[in-house]
Length: 295
Image 1: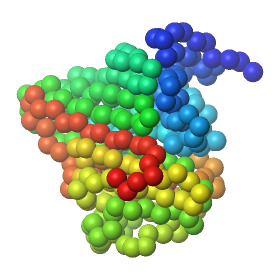
Image 2 (image 1 turned 135 degrees about the horizontal axis):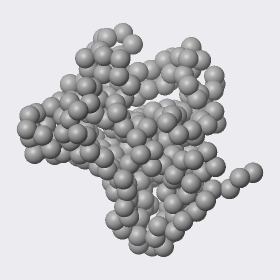
Image 3 (image 1 turned 120 degrees about the vertical axis):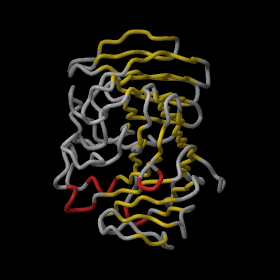
Image 4 (image 1 turned 90 degrees about the vertical axis):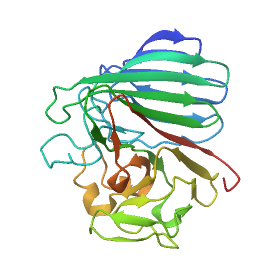
């Protein structure tokens, strides 16, 4: 089997080129191991030492240049879902297959930090605005991603986006989410709005945007360490599972993959879309980690 070509980026970070031609940054520090592909600024793995991976990627993913990856944390920018005008542009924005610039910001024993960035020139018909998007990735005892958008142009634009986090689950039957009860959500499958139910069950296709206060959300499963999702700059959380029928239509996704994943996505979506004035900046941040407490 062909092995990746490896270069040293810093003491704890290496740059690899896979046999398929993709470049990825591999972080190994005293707290965790992480993998970040330059195509799409796409994090595919975060594993605290002694623990299972906190991210999920389909076994059907071929990791091909020019193809968006299925799993991990895709960056959806500068729109989330279909193009807001209904035009036939790529779902979830412009940057999922772009090769991002990068640099090492910090490389300490217990904290590794990377910055990736792109700029738009205002000539794309799907997003005719000048902007800079940056992703700051911090690998420590938890994983933090900050997606920072700056309006470089002379006119305002509307921004919707998400850090589309795929999380592994043991089975849909045993998933418990806390922190969302009573908040209103938009059901994208029916177009209706209603309060988040208690208890919550993953027993059908789910595509919901919870319009909340950005409070921490906990993911519990029997026999597993509790996981937390924290957010800043976000008052919308996307909860998604394709279930049986939709799974059969997805690229790079096995028919039964719906049983092993659940997406909990820090977002600016639906009513939480943001308008950026010239020169204005908006950061969207998510943190994923393990905890034995409620916060």
